Amino acid sequence: MKQKVALITGANKGLGLEMAKQLAQKGIRVYMAGRNLNKVETAAKDLKKLKLDVVPILCDVTNSMQIKDAVTLIEKEEGKLDILINNAGIMIDSGGWMENNAATVSLDIMRKTYETNVFGVVDVTQQFLPLLKKSPAARVVNLGSILGSLTLHAQPGSPIYDAKCMAYNSSKAALNAVTIHFAHALKDTKIKVNTAHPGWVKTDLGTEHAPMNVQDGAKTGVDLALLDDNGPTCGFFHMGDKLPW
Image 1: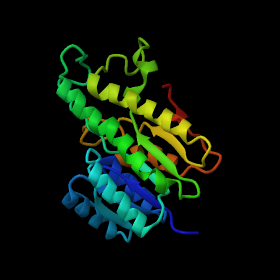
Image 2: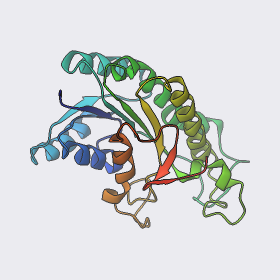
Image 3: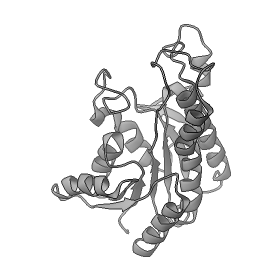
Image 4: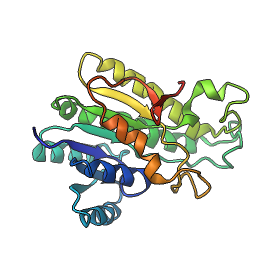
């Protein structure tokens, strides 16, 4: 069988970098995409020192031409894509994590957040669909957040009830909808589409106050990327547990 091929966006640091490492350790060739090629190349160099098969590429998910170029490159080199992890994401809400900023968040912040966290995911996934369909059984993993759960946000007493960052949270709720719609569109194929909640992880976004290390945070995304034929699709998961939409 041909070697499996994966693409991870936002792969130069944090969860993206760790997922690239864990997948490459399983013998998968990982294309590490990022909007700053120098940073991606530096991150990939460290993994190559470990004899891991990684390829750094330029791909800003808000730039359709860069996505097209990434598709062209991977089509030429591999002829297929087995795993797509839409990991790139931003959180630029003003105010603290626990502050409900619905009345004050600017439309500029809303638009910038959705450009990366929602529209970028749609663009990347649509452009890579032809290559995903050439895989025997492709997997698409969207890196979401429990903060995108409408059920838990509406439930007094839930762990996230008071964590109301309008732009970020609503973008992750929209991402869950994107997962559901792609999973349905591909229900008659062997492609599985799921959302992964990594947990509150020590990354630039999660901060040092987070209780989980990046190695554990990467596990949910990696597990969903490696689902067998009996695995789920159209789900929202954390460490094997299904979360409410």
